[in-house]
Length: 454
Image (spheres, rainbow, N blue to C red):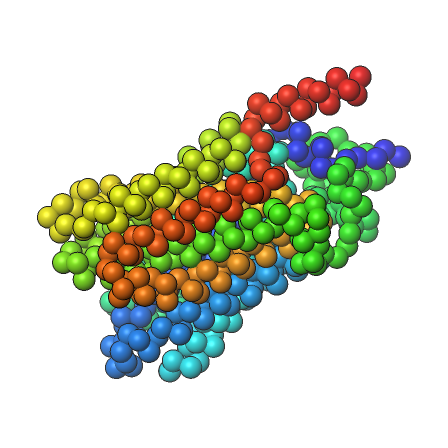
């Protein structure tokens, strides 16, 4: 009988085409998560006309989605650690799909708010489990890139929501939009559920599922005997149950506090941008087309920045990369706060939104990879879920912070909120101890370990 350290086997092993296919599957789930998250924002103008209500009537409804995502992120992470990442992910997908579909039946704001909150539970639960799965499918050297590539699919889903809305709303109405938004994730779940395997590191904690683990490892290209037993070095004794209090143990307390603060202020800043960029610019005299292009520049910059940030982390590690990008976001926000928006100079405006959105989102998306790196397997889902839940709380507050800033000082105060938030993110990431190491450091440690082993 051979004892196999599944963590070492995967972390130091090669990457196969099958692993890339698995990452693609988790990415598809997050694309649809991002799509359903942003459907309501696209549908609000149609609802205003049909129900003859002022925009303010939907303020609480818009806050209920992130509130549900906050609760769902924490619940989904704990469920992932207890019943498996794959199972929790697909329960989350089916949940947000079903309640998005239910929104198509509502005839008033109260039911809309209720279903939006309930769909938010599933939307929030999908993210931590997708991140945990992506981190555990691939070798350690590719973990940051795999997780970031998965998470960056969220704004891609927002782009899909906008394209879908442009095609469906004018001809078929907002109810059809939510029908399509609900059916697409259900169809995806039916296809992916039989194809995506459970996390191998999670399976290693369940002796009754070792036969399943052996089949998966063989498909990944590892030679594993049929009577193998499994451990994971450094897990401190694998546990079958995880709790939020485990994140505040002395070994993780500082990392948990830093991550939670970084997610809170990072997601708050991002949501301030998504909610108020068009409103702020149209009030300053820009056309609706320019305002929409500015928000698109923010999102496209975020996608590019996230991918670039993940690639740099693989070479330099997360500490120097994330702190540098946070500093660049602060500088960009300060420049925009001191530069009054000029409707005659849209090019400069678009460039600045690309820089601000790119640097801010590069930090935000790579924080998921950092969270996956901080916690061991048995509490990873809980750790990611708790940090994301704090970020969702920041998203809830964002609507009030952005509105207050615009009322208090217009665009200068509005852009100053980004600078303040990213200064706090910088400080929060600086206190995290378990940052992702650079590839050079990882290779040196591996050589030292091999030498010691001989």
